[in-house]
Structure formats: structure tokens, C-alpha cells
Amino acid sequence: MKGILLDTDTISYFFRGIPQIKEKVEQHLHSQQGINISVISYYEVCNGLYYRDAKQQLQQFKKFAAHCTILPLNQEIADLAAKIFADLRKKGKTVGHTDILIAGTAIFYELELITNNTKHFDAIEKLNMANWMVG
Image 1: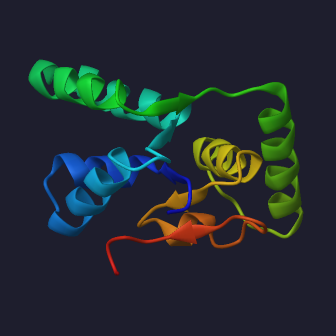
Image 2 (image 1 turned 90 degrees about the horizontal axis):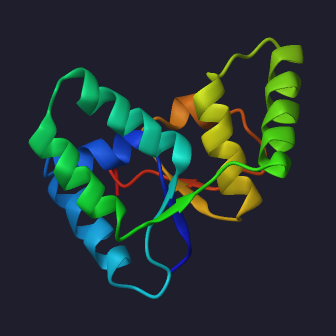
């Protein structure tokens, strides 16, 4: 198995119990590579759960996250993400800052980004992606 980075949407699908996502996440959790999550996705999930005052779901997410590797941002990732953002902007394409930082994390650590939001990331060169919702 290749090392993976779960996008925020995939984490959400896992907690909604989407069968194909749940199965693959559990396979990776018990594999040597494990599960990686960007600190940005960690923030996005927590942000949504705090906003909804979903204490039980927040507790479940934090328990899950404790079994994952939360990848921090660093100066190299920030620089890589800034270059990606600038290059896309010059081409007239816009991608949100959080998505750019998640993509930069995947590229920096040479991980496959698992996302159903492929349209958000299609324009980013050197990004390896998979969509577990379609196969």
C-alpha cells in the first residue's frame, strides 16, 4: 500500500459510514503505512464540529485522529503551496488556500491524496490523487 493523505471530505465520508470509504480507511489504519491527515484537515473537521457543538462527534474524531499521523505545516510546505497558488493564479485558475496547503502537504511527503473533490485539485501538477468514492 502506498502512503496516503486523507482530504477533509474523505474523513467526513468515513464518519458518515460510507461503506467503501470505511473499509479502505480501516485497511490503511491497520497497515504499516497507516493514515496521514494534514493539520489543515484536522482544523477543518474540528472547526465544523465545534461550530455545530457536536461534542460526541468531536470526541470520536479526536479518538480516530489519535491513531493517525497529523502532518504539520512547515516552511517548505508553505513555500511549495505558495508557488502552486501563484502558478495557478497566473493561469487564471483559483483553488482555495486550505486545499493548496493540503495538496502541498501531499506533494511534500510524497503521499497520495484521497479526495472526492478531484475538481479542486485537478490543476495541481505533481499531485497524486485517488477518489475512493468511485472505485
